[in-house]
Length: 65
Image (cartoon, rainbow, N blue to C red; front, side, top):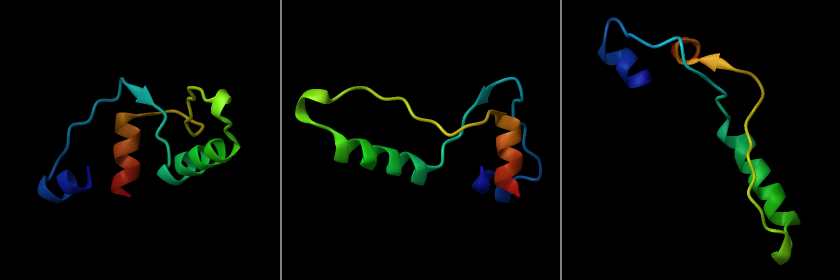
């Protein structure tokens, strides 16, 4: 997004799809926490995201700030 913003005068970004962008540091901390607590017989599948929701348009606007 940042590269496109530098290369183009105008960007078209959809606003009808939403998601939960997750900060990589928060995800890494979660994985490390689970790995340190894991026992061989208690391995599982986990889902982690930060809180909040935004559209791709809102996300692009924040990136450009």
